[in-house]
Length: 366
Ligand SMILES: [Zn+2]
Image 1 (tube, rainbow, N blue to C red):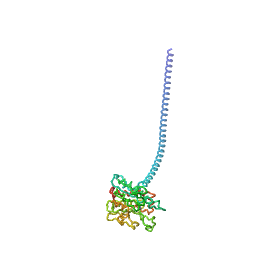
Image 2 (image 1 turned 45 degrees about the vertical axis):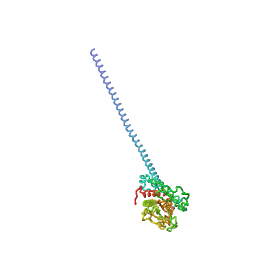
Image 3 (image 1 turned 90 degrees about the vertical axis):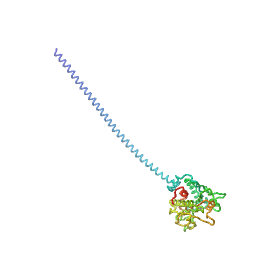
Image 4 (image 1 turned 45 degrees about the horizontal axis):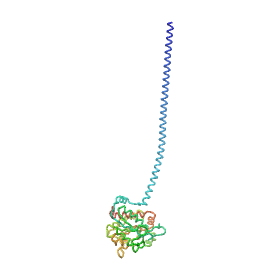
C-alpha cells in the first residue's frame, strides 16, 4: 500500500512537474509570440516610419520639385514683367522730354527746384506777329506759321519763367492781337510800337520771333536755306544797350538758345558771340544771311532811334527791350522740328533759363 501511495505521489508530482514545464513552455512560446508580435509591430512601425520617412522625402522632393517649378515660372514671369515694365518706362520717359522737358540740362532742373520764390521781376512777352501774318505754304513747310509758333513759345516761356519766380504777361494770348483799339495788321506795321509800350508795367520787353533771309540768299531758294545760316540773333533796343543787366540777359538768352539748337541738331556750333556795351554790333543784311557766322547780340538803328517799331515802343517808355530771333524758319529742319517735335518748349526753356541767369537769379557762366 505504501509503495502504491509512493507511486501515486511520484505520478502526481511528475504530472505537476510536466504540467508546469508545459505551461512554462507555453508561456515562453506566448512570450516569443509577443516578442515576435512586438518585433513585427516594431518592424512594421519602423517600416511605416521608414515608409513615412521615405514618403516624406518624396513629398518634400515633390514639393521641392514643384516649388522650384513655380519659382522658375515666377522668376521667369517676374523678369518678363520687369522687362515689360522697364521697356514701358523708357517709353514714358521718352514721351516726357517731347511733351514737357526736352533736352533740359540738369542745371536747369536744379535751379528750378531751388528757385521758386517770387523775384519781383516782371517780363512782358510779345509773341511776334499774329496768325496769318506770314504763313508759308508748299512742300516741306509742315504748316509752319511764325505767328502761331511764336505764341506757342511765348505761352511756354510764361510757364517756364514762373519756375524761377519771374512773373510775366503777354501782348497776346490768342492767334490775334488787340491793343488800344488796334488789331492784327495794324499792330504789325503802323502801330506796332503799341506792342512795345505794352511793357510799361514790366522790367523787360521780349519779342519772340523766328528769322528769315533775303530772297534766294546764298544762291538757295528763300525757304530752302542750308543749316549753316541758322543762328540766334538778339536785337536789343537803345535802353537795353546801355544796361549791363539787359546785355547780360541778351547774352545769356543767346548762349542758351544756341546750346539748345545745337543739341536739337539745328546748328553746327554751340558757340555764341557774347558782347558788352562797347562791342554790340550793328545789324546788317549781310551778317544776317551769312553762312557759318556765330549768333550774337546786335542793335539796329534807324533814322530815328531804334529801327524796329516794337523796340522803339518799349524804348519810348524807358523799358529795355529785345527781339529774339530764335532761329531761321527758312531752314526746313527748323520748320520740321517746330511743327513735328516740341521745339517751342525747347526754346522756351532756353529763353527762361537765359533770362533767369541774366538777372542773376541762377548762376551764370561766361
Ligand atoms: Zn518775325
